Length: 423
Image (cartoon, rainbow, N blue to C red; front, side):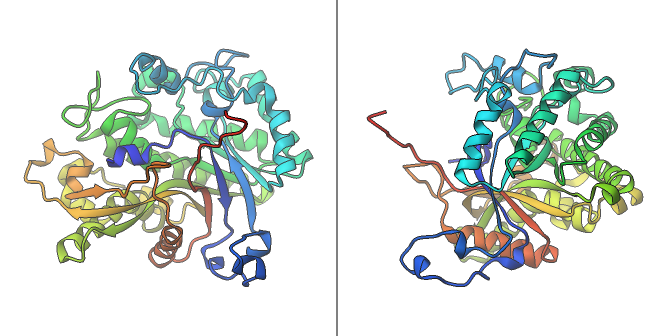
């Protein structure tokens, strides 16, 4: 199974929200745990259990009450007859109409928190400017209903669904213009919802966005170039680096605004979310161990090093040549520590084998620049191999590499097919 398949995040999943890495392993053992049964008593006090969805996968009502199309709508339409289980969010889980029923179920389940994303094109249909009253009303109602049931709202501002109008106007995340537009959109979110929302995530899995949407072309907006994918437009060699750069700058701009204008009064926290693997060398050879370190830099450090240290990993600079954009001194300063917490989505371990490439830089995508081959252990039941030790190793890696940052485990685990009454 290739890296693109394993990074596909188009799903709704259960989430665990963790206060800090330092709590890992701190819970006292219990008789229930010794019998193989895990309960809340096995977790530290203050541990928050929740569930999460994204707007496109959950809301539906794609053409109702002023919502404009997003790049995900366009991507779904373009692949409607591709025969590869295309996803259409026009109805989805109908959360736009059934959110009260869903929140009632959340309460009955015993959830402490619910993580959801705001549809930019529902709140601001033109991408910038006028706010849609119906969209504003919906999110206010959703937030209030959660709070009325004692459930914390954890809000993500962007999860793959850029307003299509901005993609058509200036190619969306490929243009630095997105930085100002995203910051203005975030300003609306903070202003309208920040009196009740105290947990904000700017971007969901931007490292998966650049891989799926701009290298392989198997996620929105569906851009790529051969031989890395088969798309009508795009450049897999350069575009992932450009998009990642603009994502980071948009994030830091929004965080700077929040801290300057809202945080002292609203007393909230703001962070970013990434997809993360437990990366292991395929063998104990020196070459595979070095390849695993490179993979960690390209998959994880690509986004986390700028957030904590203000610049990209050295090995990325060495391997990419002039393709990797540079941060100005002011941009670097604004990026450093621009997260109050780090959100992670963990689903799998990845073995890495050394795989040198001799092609020139202008013919390599980021995976070729990495000079490593990803190898995934398969699981015939779920498609994911998710051993328990993997999450612990990921948390330990983040603790050691980035100074024990506060962590929210936004997504993890695996799915099963449940048969009830023969269905």
